[in-house]
Image (cartoon, rainbow, N blue to C red):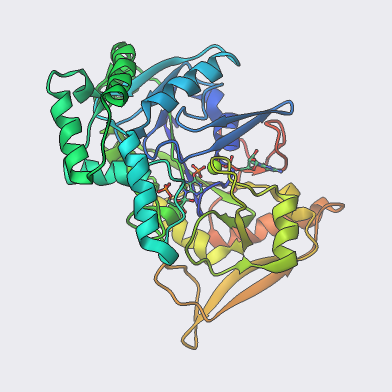
Length: 401
Ligand code: GDP
Ligand code: IMO
Ligand code: MG
């Protein structure tokens, strides 16, 4: 196996950062293909926490990093994240797609404005201008990094400003252009670059931001992000044909969390929710918001496995769940009097059917039973299990590299 794509199997924050970091040393190139600084991917090394927002979480293991065309970039944030990470470790070679669209202060303002207009039905975005940046891209008035190096760039800012009716100051524009010039030596055609490297035998780790059910197409629309978060996102997000995707790993938390609005069937509330939130320290890596919590959901993972074509599942935070006194797993739903075994964002679930499991904090056999149960239901191997925050807290059940 050469190339692997790692995606979030639920609503994001599944612990992708830790799994990506763990596997990264087996790869040459780490690629982000979607989203922007709305992502927060945490890696903990000997108690030291590093949060990646735009830079791929494969940072510590690979020699080369790529931000592909499917990503939207706040260049100021990118610059500061590179500076910060450079103080921690030698920075790998970084390449950026010429075609990646940028996020401007006008996109930040529009994000807040749109949330305000929605009022009670707000999405609960990260307010990082992500939705508007993709809106501009698909509306065909977006600005790509390559555009920032052309003479007519002011006209592009002018059009954006007119469409949004939001002022963008000359200083703001000059700052963005200035940073783009600094990156001009890092700009590439991602599709060519990756194909050439694959032909030279290099191994590529593609990492998704966010999670399957906040995908723009297949998520709980409109409570979604604005990019393709599923494995198929690799192709349009990099320009590589589908045959190069090869293997796909889904990262699933052993319970479910969600930040922002939108229904999830196994959500729990009150003291029980508060206890799980505290045990797992479920507060957003990007915005610090408390994450909503709920039980592990097999019908949801089943759908996720279908949409992404999982070859493997990495299960995370079993150390947290093992401490929880009530361990439940959703096995099916009741919908209009029928039992339904596969999640669909359009379903109106009347009741969730659960199976209970014994805590494993002092009995590892109970953990094995929990994992075996999920494997037998989904019929996809779980070779890697996260049982702690630190990068070495991993149970390898089967060596895949
Ligand atoms: P990502 O967005 O999917 O990369 O996940 P986040 O980094 O936003 O959130 C996951 C949180 O759980 C982070 O604080 C991680 O350090 C932490 N984490 C990841 N895996 C494990 C695990 O197996 N056990 C524990 N206790 N924490 C974990
Ligand atoms: P990582 O990569 C969890 C959520 C937001 C909001 C919705 C839309 O760390 O898993 P946006 O700012 O993208 O327009 O917000 O999507 N969201 C995430 N939730 N993890 C993430 O990223 C997220 N990125 C966006 O909370 O509900
Ligand atoms: Mg996160």
